Image 1 (cartoon, rainbow, N blue to C red):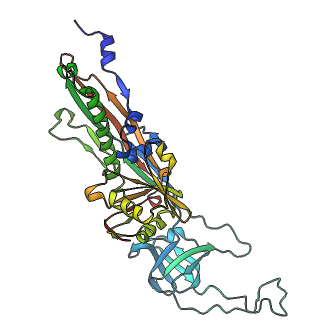
Image 2 (tube, one colour):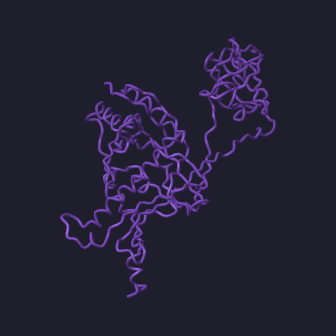
Amino acid sequence: MARGLESILTDRRVLDWGDKIVKLEPQSYPLTVLLRAMGKEVAKNQVFVSFEDRPWVRWGVVDDYAANHFTLRAVAGAGAAPYLATYIRTGDLLWDYTQGFMLFVDSIAYDTGVITVIQNYSGRGVANMGLAGQSGKTFDTSDTTSDTNLTVADNDVILKLSNVWEDGGSAASPRAQNLTKAFNFVQKFKSSYTVDEETMLAELNGEPELKLLQARQAVEHAKDIEYQLILGKKDARVYAGAARPAQAGKYIYTSGGLYHSGLPEDGNIGAFTEVVFRSFLRPGFRYGSKHKAFICGGLVAEGIDFWAMGRMKLNEKSTTMGLTMVDYLFAGSVASIQRHPLLEDQLEGVGFLLDMDLLKYKYMTDTKLETGLQANDAEERLDQYKTRAGLKLGLLECHRMISGVTSISG
């Protein structure tokens, strides 16, 4: 007897397993659980792009000083590039932190990055202020002597303070930096299982085989996604493999994850101490939220538990998601710590401090269970889980990675 439409609709149904999966073994994939609970966004294309507006860079290092001219490079950079002149305007006040005196920006050549300054910009007009004979209605016009200091030198650390303008005059010169663009890809994940009719008819101890496979594949499918969100590298290409010849010439997209995204990193740590951890947290909380998640391997978690025993408290909100995060306090900030079971073996010494406000689970179709995919005459049942998703990671400076922990020290 031919199958009717009603049978096809019954067997080949699609079930949305997005929320069910995160309830099966939430401790096994905490990043996915957190992202689905705190930040899901629909992706309208397999490439998703975001634009980011960053704070201006104010610290720099002097290069190529000569006769009041120099360029500025980033503190962490090498050589003369990248030039920081784009963040500076005529009339800005700079502080030579290394030698302790002020500079006035007289002109800038934006094409070459060369800044011309007036040095020793402090001390005039103050010699006799407050003494007898001074009305206090104007500065001491008789004092035209600047403070005496050394001259600027290569590798001096410079901080842009503010800007100053003469009485009257016109508007300040406009300066702006372009937005930066970040992107990632939506990756298609599939996990399938099959059960023949005889197995489904057989009386077995424990759960029916179909139900057992359905639950196990759901967890493994979620782990595939979790590993990709943490360790994946971005890639997009035309598929040319031999395994699926019918798909040759079609596009295949791979989503990038945290580990290879270029996060600021404290690497090659070696012995992990509380001093090392707190030194890691200090720049980690410089930008963004003051309450961040810290997902880490077992060795890192063991160290934190060892130092902070009795000083951390359970994050009760995390228990509603099936997690057991504990809060570590750091100078007005909070790191909610979650040991990640997938960060094992070679990854036990890795951890990620994450601003969850700037992380999103982007999906074109969230996890769904497609059932009854077998051929009409097949005496077995074929089901599969399918997800189209990727990681949206905003403002790298708001997150931080620690790696290379090999031992714990008190």
